[in-house]
Image 1 (spheres, rainbow, N blue to C red):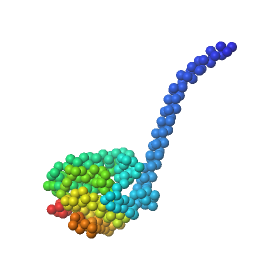
Image 2: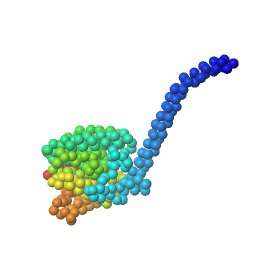
Image 3: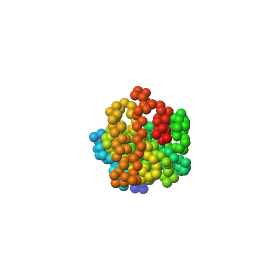
Image 4: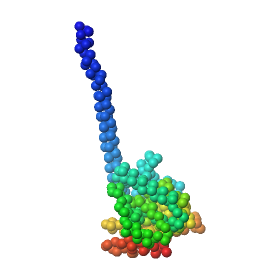
Length: 305
């Protein structure tokens, strides 16, 4: 009877043994799917929280990023990266997702490579945000690819081609982002030795609700970074432009740039520190329709000449 019973049950045991790899594969697939789903959910929550806390509001993130005090106060300080625990971080903590970070990183690396390959005749370098990047293409966006702007680019070359200019601006960048790029991102390559740095940055800081005093302090540090790296270069600090719909920025944007220019000359080193030229362009802007790229080019070119 035992022999007969074992013969009857043997096929079942063989079937179960054969099914075990398939069952294990199904279980492994389920674990993999669950892991991917959990990662996606946590990633989405992470970026949503970051987006909500990225501005200068009462959120806890405001204690980490600059809202009421500068992120760096002296040349020895390091501008922070995002995420803080990553060795391969970037300064932009306000991008909506990984793909945007990849595109920002790619654009920054292209510009760092251009700086490293700069020719001796490159005498003018533009630094800033989308207002400056807009000479070549629509400013960098975390949600859409940039679009070439051939008309603006032609105006740019017509106005500044004499200096063999280099445009190293990225849309959406704040003062702190530019500071990081200069200090830790390789933007101040050895080959990059222009006669003039034209800097326009700060509108995104103010647009996020940052104190104009913080903007001014960080602008001072960025100008000091440039001066320390290239003491022979002339620094042209352009006033922060009017921002559509943000009427409350009117006085603050002027205060930030003017305060930076006034406080850049440090009493400790009066012989070596040169105050940057402040280009207050707001007078050239129409109250309703703004201005045209040609007007902007003309104003900036006049200051350079």
